[in-house]
Amino acid sequence: MIALLARDLKLALRAGGGFGLGLAFFLIVTVLVPFSVGPQSQLLSTIAPGVLWLGALLACLLSLDRLLALDWEDGTLDLLATAPLPLESIVSIKALAHWITTGLPLVLAAPVLGILLNLAPEGYVWVVISLALGTPALSVIGTFGAALTVGLKRGGLLLSLLVLPLYVPTLIFGAEVARRGSLGLETTTPLLMLAGISAGVIALLPFASAAVLRVNLR
Image 1 (tube, rainbow, N blue to C red):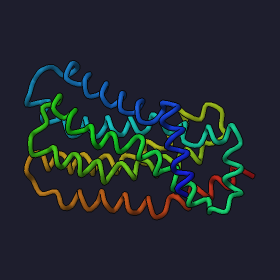
Image 2 (image 1 turned 60 degrees about the vertical axis):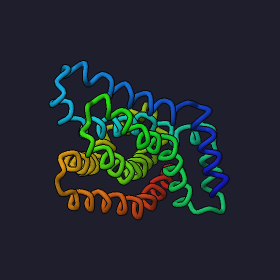
Image 3 (image 1 turned 45 degrees about the vertical axis):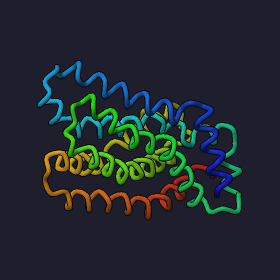
């Protein structure tokens, strides 16, 4: 499993479709929002938590089509399916590699980009906490979507249509945690809901992804 994780990390960094692409997209979204809504500091401060969360979600979505497609095209996925490792473990490692190369950089970059959106000082910690809890769910859900569309021509658009509705609960509670934190309000309820969503998808979706892959590989 460690060897597979190291391989996926190296491939993501060499291909440029993980770390650099997602972070650049996140930066572009954050920079363009002040231009589109105007220089009103109060308005930017109000929408900053939602914009940061939406930018992180779209950045995660951007690299999902490469998650399993490259391994499918060169036959690596067939070899992995016959490896001693359970397919559920392989899918989990794929999701972990995606989070390390895409989700983790977004978590670390969010406080810096929050300055551009005039994020309230109380909100920086809560933005990091909400993204740290929510982005693993985005990667696991995205891996499930990638497993559903693997082998399909032009499956990227279909993948986006399948995954985006599943992302909505994570987006709602993640942005709500950041919003309440920036306003100094109680964050316990949305924080627990966000943690529950992440724990649930991490526990269940690898089995669903593995089952879908077994069907697609037959």
